Amino acid sequence: MKKLFLLITLQIVNLAFGQSKFPDYLQGTWKMENKEIYEHWDKMNSQILKGFSYKLKNGQMEISEHLEISQRNNQTIYTASVINQNNGKEIRFKLTKTDSTFVFENPAHDFPKKISYQKLSDNEIFVQVSDGKQKGFSYKMTKQNIKDTTVANPNYDKTLADKLGGDDYGMKSYFLVILKTGTNKTTDKALINESFRGHLDNINKLVEEGKLIVAGPLGKNKNNYRGIFILNNIKNIEEAKELLQTDLAIKNQLLDYEIFTWYGSAALPEYLPFSDKIWKLNP
Image (cartoon, rainbow, N blue to C red):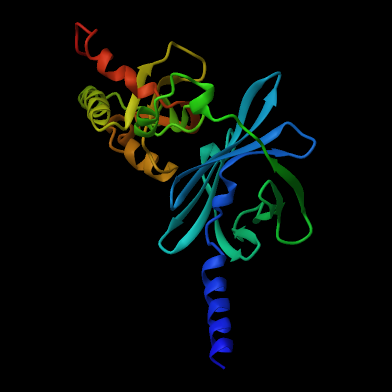
């Protein structure tokens, strides 16, 4: 009887702890069967996987989608942001099933409503994307044997890469903001001067906080684009939009913006200390 009780207890423990609620096995690079389409995932910590989808064309990487799986408030969330779609808006899917297959769902989204990852083996996964009914597609992906960057790059500095948040390719996600003429057509010079003075002051403030790493005007163009920002260390598009409202010119609608996710070198912020040594006049 004691042996039977022990066996039952062990089975319960295995069920409780053997089925992870976080798909750590996705870490690495995966290739779609018969196509030059890939997914790459990095484990940032015990609660966050960051990834991206890309194609290889003539040996060049073309990023199509930024991905994240994270545990928040006792929930596991799959976040996807497709480049040049939805104005960079993130679409979130909640984990609803975790046996041999991780199923993420968002019933309110048009398509897809359901994304699932099934682990077939250590080197194979099966992905399904659907509306939860009949419409959808599926494919198998195989894990790629990517050479360790510490061997491939003799100059690799892990401490620096970790500090800057770089992935295996030395890259990270930013938010690219294109500023454009706003809807406020006021001729009130006092308001205009105050707003754009606040605009410049806010730029300096965000740089000091490490949240803005590139800012500058654009030349005259037919789209009424006025300038660009590249935002750094921002969790999601909602936070980016909230941050932009601290800009007085945007708040007063003298400037408007379009926002996109952008994948670039994690070393980009490293130029900032030098930029402070080369200007003679402060605008």
